[in-house]
Image (cartoon, rainbow over all chains, first blue to last red; front, side):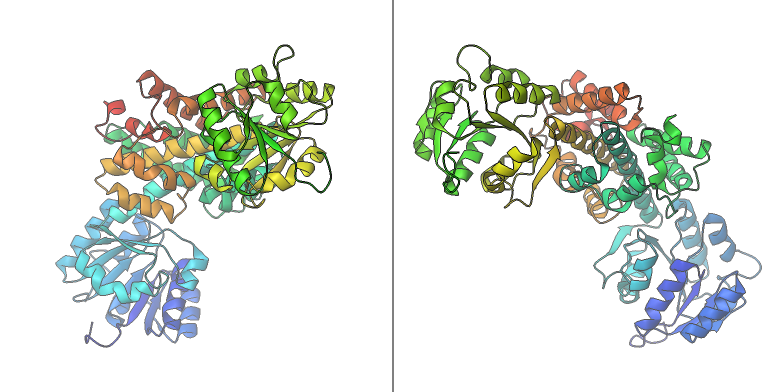
Length: 304
Length: 304
């Protein structure tokens, strides 16, 4: 950063609904968004105009324009591409710069990026998000961070503006550990989701009103976040996709594989993975994870 | 009840920690507890003195002494015994009386008791509790009721005093349905518990701090009531029994059997039942349900 008192300048790579909303939030909180970049130039030009930023057609141009560069891309492949060792890359001229990588990646990729950045005198932080689009816009993301503690400490003022004034900001440990925690969150969430679908499905079979059941579940030992987020959708068969069944199958599968390498048997995570894989096999993979209720409600497709 | 304006008089049969605390609560709220009865005479005599009630050595005496008789016994067998067709029975002289049966029973038993009571001009209500001892004392029980709607309506003033001024009082449907709902609550709760134990166990294997994981779970899509009630106990191996693993195995087994009779396959409930049965086989059945973590944490008994 140029001085200790001035606010750092900020750039964004990856302007999907998460990245664009995080940029809007920081702009609103008084940060200079100096440059933006996306594979979709139209999107990038429009956001640049909105935030009084420059659209940089090159990645090296993004790095040159800011102290802190947020990357909010889709997966390991996209993340590696923007940090390529050759050709146009964020690592060009990156000495003294800090990259905040918000994609959900394999832990090993975070470790690899950190080493590559350090080699050119730059820093990285893994910032794993366990929230969705409205929270990005409102600056109330649950942000789990992995990397050097000193990098985290230095970025804290800007990350605070994204995480409900820091109330939802967590330092987890070295690079890659935040992604491990997120994998565990998703594994447990998927189990709770699959279990809720079974409870509502059996209740419906018994002739009980599933909306009454949801109300009772919410106030008893059966209560969980997914009762709130997925319960009504299961009953109403509203499976517009927020988090796909295929994604759930992949995440639970990663957790089961990790457990196997550590000699642990996890029957619930395994049963959940199998249910989500069954959804994929039935052609329901691109429906929301709540569509697992199609396998447990009487008379629905997956039960016949 | 003798008049429309006077408060009904109340008696209790079954003075375990739930029943005794419910009696204390109603006494405190101005109801006359006229008689109490328990198989353990010492317990009954002491509570009678405390509440200015009469200890009735016979069941017929309890019925004679009150308008409303709460029964808080352990199981189907005990419940049937106090409503026996011959010998000392609550049904003797029961015309006009109302019985509130709070034990967790097979749904069929509630239906059978209702019919037997109606035959002698008495009424019954199933009042299924989804809370524990402190809530009984404080009058903040989650109370799910099954039986005639008019019986429920008539009892509402007194039930209100037990259920956080009625905020936690629910009419579910005919006799037996409240117990069905409770079985579903326990089935889903057990799944969430087994899933949490897997998430914490795998996290510990990965070298993550399980207390940090609990904090993250509580604030993300993995959040559930059991994270609050069982999470720390799993980490600290504090398995003093509130709800035994054997009880969990039984409840999940009932749910799986019900599902089978309705042609539904519930892999999560089945895996959960199997885990709790494994605990029983390992001699852990009388530990708390949180002890399922003994099967999923690295280096603990059930994983070796």
